[in-house]
Length: 196
Image: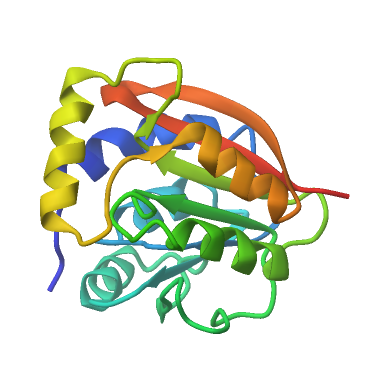
């Protein structure tokens, strides 16, 4: 069954404008945590020169439905993948994109994301993470205070992750921090690249 998320529909154009400056001119993008499949649908249309590989830990049916409706040849068949799996379902990627994943997963998912990315990406390739973040020297926005409380209640081990901690995990995994981009609704895009 095809599912629809209002936030995914609203944020896709803004994310696409950022991705246009980051993603390679050709190759395969691995999306970790494709959710409903709406971002995969939007970005395969926006970036027809890229192969888009959606994945999700469970419930692939909505992604299959969006893919069937799209018919885009670069919208690849979704694959099951959990960050706590031993190995990813593909051998290599030219970029990795993950939206709204690490804050709904346990904190241990963050180093797992960078571990898998390190195995899949070549030096210089980007890892792009979208979602809310908190900062050590900055008060969390009121809307994100409420969202963080909801995450703790809804997802065991979930919660808005600290920017500085994510950067420390990235550095330990061999990734350089590139940019922190402000997005609507108190979200961010963090860009990392695998170190040379």
